[in-house]
Length: 110
Image (cartoon, rainbow, N blue to C red; front, side, top):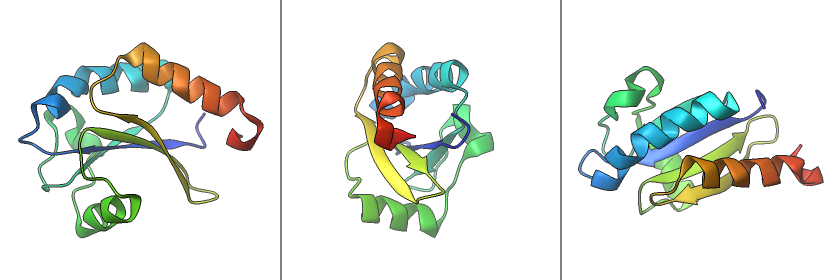
């Protein structure tokens, strides 16, 4: 799955975003994906300060993808510049992992 990156939209004032940090960490471990934190308020989540993308480009990407509610998790296929929403809100690692596996097993997802 190293062809895919994952982007997690967040806001520091969002308790659900803080609640999802351990889930995102587990997801990175289970899938081997790098989770990039894309804070809509320019404040990185503590667990993802090393992979935080807090820039005007983050806000523009969120606007382009229609991200308003957070937390919001997306897969990005950079070779084709395709984005797929995987999760919105608080969900379990297993549920998100299952969605990624279904996507990855689908012929268009490769």
